[in-house]
Image (cartoon, rainbow, N blue to C red):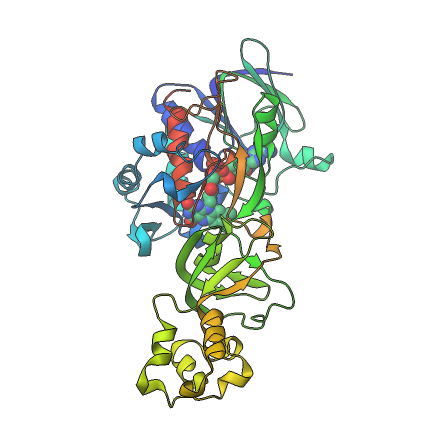
Length: 419
Ligand SMILES: Cc1cc2nc3c(=O)[nH]c(=O)nc-3n(C[C@H](O)[C@H](O)[C@H](O)COP(=O)(O)OP(=O)(O)OC[C@H]3O[C@@H](n4cnc5c(N)ncnc54)[C@H](O)[C@@H]3O)c2cc1C
């Protein structure tokens, strides 16, 4: 086995690993990144439908869920959305602001991933791509990480890499040969297990546990919610409406999309961050409207219920929400009970999802390494000095809207300033 020395060894050349590497290398640190994918920043490149919602102008700790709601504050204060805007703008990456303060690349998410990779390479960072982490230990002086070519590991029955194409691998020691890397600082930036089809794993959680950190159970979030077969609104796949979705006391008024299995669209994806198995979700299909007021309005008295609802909602949805015996009634003829039922169906439709569509459809995973023994300023472990954890591997999960990538940048920078 060969010994390879570096100052900062970063596991994961994704969003936070690249940002950390760029920052540490700019301080003159010798940096090595290891990733089992063949290309850097795989999730960055597919983020935001390939346009990468890279930050949000409205950035607060309240946009994050996790065991300690205050934890993100320090890193977010020291790397703001405008810092990210400056970085992309200074490098001639065109971007646009969309609704709710979300900033997207105009051309391609590759622009952001390529920029970070180029910055790293220009500062002398070494990339060991297509390399799988076999083991991590601390020999009393430094971290020792054993890596092996991912393809060989896969052929031998290991998990290996699922990545395709991208940057050519930086060969280090000939195929099949494990290599040991020693470093004073180890940064675990291996993300979460969400979207495993591009090689996401939970290795970061295993490494954190090895050094004594507790890990909150992972669950898929920013993910469509599935409904039971008997849910009365099945069969509306493709219909999108503005709606207010409420679960666990948190509401989002955003577009809602019916799917073949349940609900998706921004309102459902946001709600999935707060939803817990067994809990109901409540959907208001006419947020901001007052159906009771419309039903009481004298000019509507002679209208059929289905006519009024057909003016407010897509026909097929309206048909499902109104009880068949009410649909053909004139509004003035509706009983008090029928009005109450209609109000309930339209403003407070309640269902208990059977689950989510799982990690393969999840843009993020909630849970992760608990932050109790992690410095919010530097992301350094208090249990093992020199160990840093950044990005989605931590128990910090952003809402939809550029918050997860911004956390990856901000936490990667916080570690890169110190590691
Ligand atoms: C489809 C999709 C769309 C998204 N869109 C957005 C968006 O528009 N805006 C936004 O803010 N967020 C978005 N996200 C979330 C965002 O991409 C992630 O939160 C962010 O990339 C996390 O950064 P990270 O550095 O922690 O992990 P990652 O970027 O996932 O990087 C982790 C790296 O570790 C490597 N790795 C993992 N396991 C191993 C192992 N065993 N050995 C070696 N290497 C390993 C991976 O190959 C990867 O390169 C999206 C996610 C998905 C899946």
